[in-house]
Length: 265
Image 1 (cartoon, helix red, strand yellow):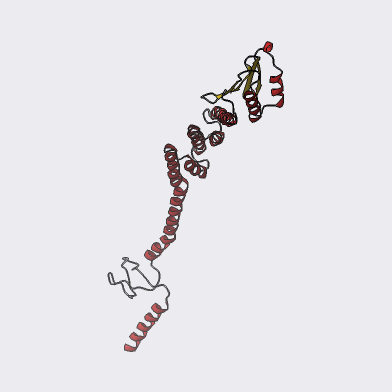
Image 2 (tube, rainbow, N blue to C red):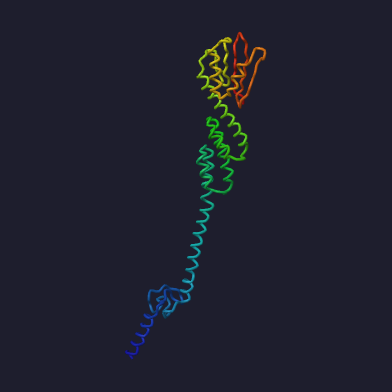
């Protein structure tokens, strides 16, 4: 009998050892097992077959993994397309407020069509143009207003800055031309808009030399000086306009040839 008991016991041990799936939990009460042949809690034999309790527990694992992965992906997408762009957008608006226009434009361009980023880019260019105009950086200001497109009165502001730029260039040209003059009777107005050659008489060589010098320095045609020399006292005051420079002159034997070079905008 002892031999039969030992054989039965050995057979059960072999069955348990050969079975690849050992109970992790009792099929009846769910008590956690650690290789026992009988449940320590309720005494139910463990056959090595996967209990329904274990099967249900394990069957949930793939679902949990999928759910976690999906959650991570959704959170990543929200951060990528909502949270981060919103942070960058608000940061760009702050840069506009603090007059860091180039930084703001760079940040907004990276956002593409997010919210009203394109409109804000135009706003930044417009404000940059105004800032540069005040600093008399006319070339850069014109470019900024061009980039502002149809924002507010950008087009009109651009035209005004172009006029200001032209005026400053002409003033610089007048100042340079005046420095080449030698007569004490040749003067430049305080606003830099007019050069006057007030000849003493018909034989004032210094005055005539300044007139020739100014005609050349201001890019006047050679025919103008010829026309001046052909003027007599009966002809009164003569005038010609070349681009933004108006030239007026008159002649009298006692006063000589008087000439006015004026900037006209």
